[in-house]
Length: 61
Image (cartoon, rainbow, N blue to C red; front, side, top):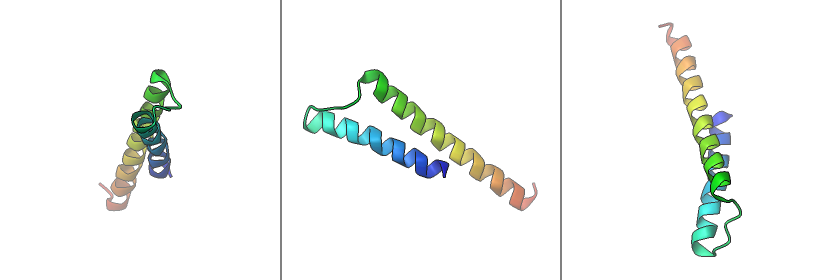
């Protein structure tokens, strides 16, 4: 769930950067772009930590 959310938020960031570069019509400003990228990073870290915790519980270590 968190990994899918991370991918979706990063897709928003990528779309903003692509639109800004190709059409000059970015829909997020600098701060908004930074917050979206930060949210994608946090969601990705949460997803990785949850996966690691699940693996640790399965192996019993």
